[in-house]
Structures are given as C-alpha cells and as structure tokens.
Length: 78
Image 1 (cartoon, rainbow, N blue to C red):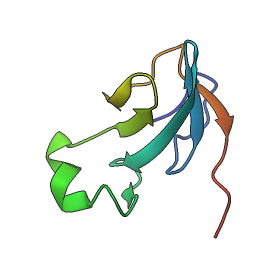
Image 2: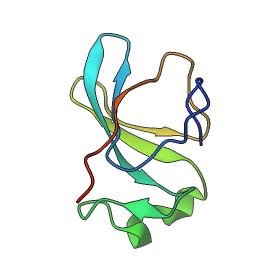
Image 3: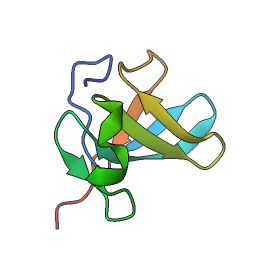
Image 4: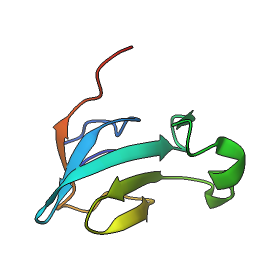
C-alpha cells in the first residue's frame, strides 16, 4: 500500500490522521512486516493492507490509504 504521495507504507512509520498525529503502522500484510505484538498468524486473514494504531482512534485497518493519512516519519532502522 502507498500513501497519497506515492511512498510505500512501512512497519513503524509514524503517521497522522486528522488531529491524531500519534499513529504507528503496526503491520503491513503487503510487505510481510509485523511488529512483535501483532503476529502474522493473528492478522493475515485480512489478506492485504496495513494496520495503524492511533492513540485517539485505536486500530484502523487500511486496504488503501485515505488521502488524509500522512507520513510524519519513517521508523528508525535497527
């Protein structure tokens, strides 16, 4: 999945949706990346897309990015 600016959505990206700028991508089925607290076996039934955890909105699954979903920062490499 890609943001509206064309960049690929990746695990750990910090994102903004509306007035909630604390979102974090917790897994991407499309790139086969999963945070430890979100194991693949538990979520791959969704088949495609990404999951974002927002402090205000909670978990939101996207198959396609909304225009309002903005990348703030990439995750730091380990």
